[in-house]
Each structure stands twice: as structure tokens, then as C-alpha cells.
Image (cartoon, rainbow, N blue to C red):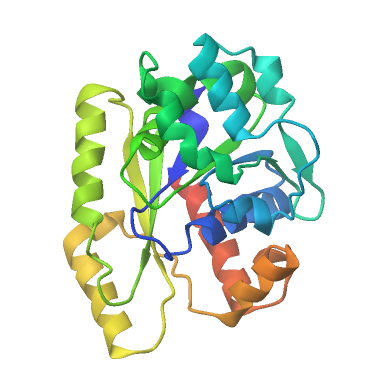
Length: 261
């Protein structure tokens, strides 16, 4: 059931990937009663921190990757045992830790190393959820390639600030390469404008994005807001608060569902 797996990616850092992963997932769970699994595929573990993850002796994504690189197969029960539930935001998740930074070296000699995450996210695991969202690290390396190989669709958050277009071309080239070689199913579902404000630069970038990518740009826009930082600090999704950016993520979740057809 790979068609319910989405990677949220942009090689540029600081574009609200983790914030968007968390808030799309929570809005679908809280407002639409969907069962959502979030995967933290970033050694910086911002998503895990947002979810107030504390090491609890159970495995993390790093352990799962190590298991696959050692044995080439992994039992679905081993994966299910690493899934935690965040009651406040009503989402399930697999956390990350700093040791994920060594994952590329674990994978170096692994056969079909681009399919490690796909093996972890087997149908036995993903069929238990309505949606699986992978929060990707800002890089074009093997971890991102793994996310793109395991997913059916990509959502690309794009910060509407200076240099926003930088890197999008490289990401599009990588997407084409993955489609042509490993995962012909992978589609770009859309690009989500984030950190939008009322400056000339922001408006200009938004116009350029729409001119360049047309219908790939979501109607939803996410404003630049201090509420997002407060939400990360408190571990409470924005859709649980009465604020503008919370309403924007709620609207984005609705648009996401509409685009499922």
C-alpha cells in the first residue's frame, strides 16, 4: 500500500518541513479522524522534538536501518514495536536520533541501499494507517533517495523568501531520475508556499512559483508566524490552537484530502 506514503522534502533547510509534516498529520488526525504515521528521517530530529519524544529504551529509525543493513530483511513486528503514539496530537510516529547521521555509512555496502526505508515501511506496516508522512532531511543524499523510493507522492514546502527557487531545480532533476530508474510511481503532489508575509520579496517569489510551476502550487499558503515557533516549543499542533497559521494548516489538510480525488 505504498500509495499512502508521502515524503515531505526540500534540500533547503528552514522551509518548515517538520512543522508542515507535524501539522498536516495532526490536522488530518484531529479534524478528519485519520490514522496517521509520521516518520522522522532527519538526524536533527526536529519532528521527534516537536512530538516531545524522550528516549525510552525502544528502537528508533536508526535501529531499524541498522537491522536492514545487517540482515537485509526486517520483520514487520520489529518495525511496529518502534511506533509511538502522541496522545495530544493524536498521531503515531517513529522517532529519529543523532546517530541517523551515520546511516549513509551503514548503507554504503548494503545491496539495493536505496530501498532500505521501503523494506522498513512494508505493506504490513503501512496498511495499518490512512497516511504515512516522511519528514526528510535537507540534503540530496541517500536518505532522501530512500524516502523518494518508498513514497508514492512528494510534497515540497517552499519558503517564499529570497533564494527560494535555489535547489528546486536540483530536487526536480533527482525526482526525474528516481522516476526513471527506481520508482516510476513517484509524483510531485504539490508545492506548499510557507513563511509567506506581506513583503515585496514574498509576493514576488509567490508569483514566480505560480508562473513556473502552475497547478503544482497548492492553493493553501502558510504565513510566517511566531505561533509556529511557540507550537514547536509546546509540542501542541497549530490546529489545536485558535490562530491564523493553525487555520491555514487545517485548510491545507482539507485541500490535501480533496486532491486525493
